[in-house]
Every structure is written in structure tokens, then in C-alpha cells.
Length: 126
Image (cartoon, rainbow, N blue to C red; front, side):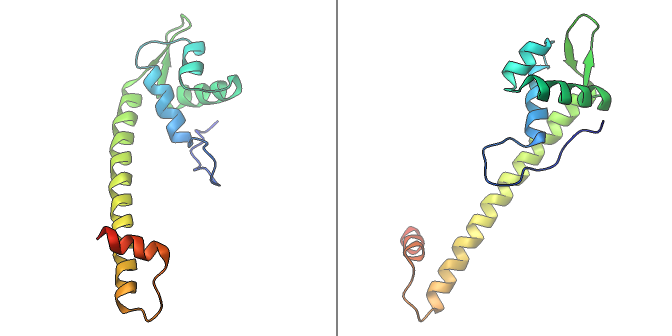
């Protein structure tokens, strides 16, 4: 079974698989049983089983044989890389938002039409 990392589709509040993996690894940073991982990562039992199997197979989680799961070195590396990924995504979003604002301002400056309500609001913020 491979780790399911397909991004979500649609506009729901569902977490992406990467977010679920991050949550599970964070819980398991201190040895944890299945129930604790399930509740703290906000998963159903079916989701928990699916992800536990995949994370064990990929070497991101380990099992101590005494009903506890723990994060591995590979899992710690995942969390570190995931944090950097989130930071980059946030920086890109800021740049995209700034570019969209600049585009609206430029369109307003050269447009012969009456500016839209959103364009007027952006012009006031500048």
C-alpha cells in the first residue's frame, strides 16, 4: 500500500493527506497508542488504520511491540521538510496576493470603465 498524498479537490474543509501525516507524526513524537493518535489527529478508525499501515511501511513511524507507535528519524525529517514547505507556500501566497492587488491597481489606472467595488477598495488600501 502506498502513502496516499493526493491533494484535495473541491472547496471543503477536508485536510490534505500531508496534513494528516503531519498530525499523526506530531502525536507520535511522544510514544502513543492507536487511540491517542486517532483522537489527537482527529481521524476515524478506518483512516487511522490506513495511515498507520502506510506510515509504518514508509518508515515514518515505528512500532515498539508494546502497543505504542513512535516517530522515526525519517518521520522527523518529514516534519522538518513539511514545515519548510508550508513556509514557502505562505510566502508564495503573499506574493500572489500582492501581484493580484498590483494588477487591479494597474487596470484601474488605465481603464476607461468605472472601477468595480473591489477595485475601489484596493485603491483605497494603497
